[in-house]
Length: 139
Figure 1 (cartoon, one colour):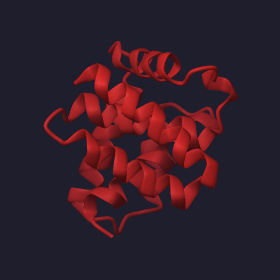
Figure 2 (figure 1 turned 60 degrees about the vertical axis):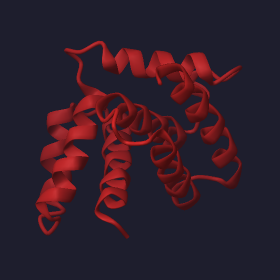
Figure 3 (figure 1 turned 30 degrees about the vertical axis):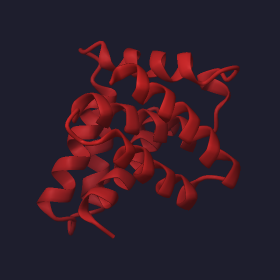
């Protein structure tokens, strides 16, 4: 598994931990990395950056990310989505916004591979449709 894929999976786990544990981003970072002291600096750096973009309360990105997802997830309220799907979408949109030079198809494909690993088979098509629609809007 590549460094970026591993980072993306970790971002999903961090966002999930923050939401389910009702923890602040700082609390998540502290406990998450304490348990993964062996993760290399490049993997950790990319994961931390995407997590920061996705959770930065001082920036309109966080609300903007959920707003984009809500807008493009037709007939699905954010709170009704599976937590894994919701947080995977947040991570992917955060990467699209924070790393505009990364090709959108790469981000979408990576997200679909992670969805195949952590979510249900039905979620893959849903996530693909939402991310494809968002990518077209922010391109």
